[in-house]
Image 1 (cartoon, rainbow, N blue to C red):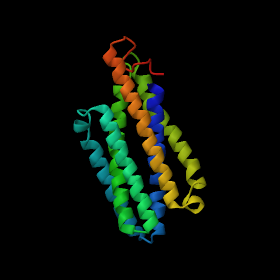
Image 2: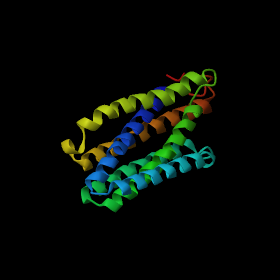
Image 3: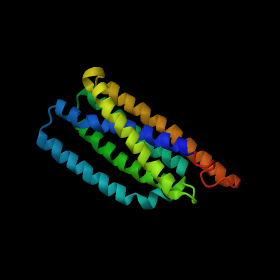
Length: 201
């Protein structure tokens, strides 16, 4: 369960992070002014912070498996919108896509933190929460640092890169949904192996 969850978080942050790294470059290439880009990125960042802060109450009350699929599919949708924006060279669609992606990312950040505590064994919470949060973050960001230069728009084109980000994001839903399903199955069985249903490994 632990490996599935960490893999899902890593894939999600890798896919969405890859898209995020290229959005500002895409906006420059679509001839948006630096003032417009700065104002919009600041607004999107503010919206992301507000959404992330407000999500805790509704997120913690919803069924986990459906919530994982809904949130991750929302992130995949934002990547898909970026594919369309890049293919159509539509600056307004790019701005809308960036806003959706930032809000989706805030939603997933809240969800991933909640999942980290939900799937953690109570007898070793500090170690497992650290694994659920720190390891995927570090691994995905190190990978993004290598992937962006290699799989940049000049090499493959924006639509191809954003399509790859969409695939990675959707794949993360499979891993996370399976981790949550196994966790609930282990808890429901009452087998005594702990809340993570398999020793966290």
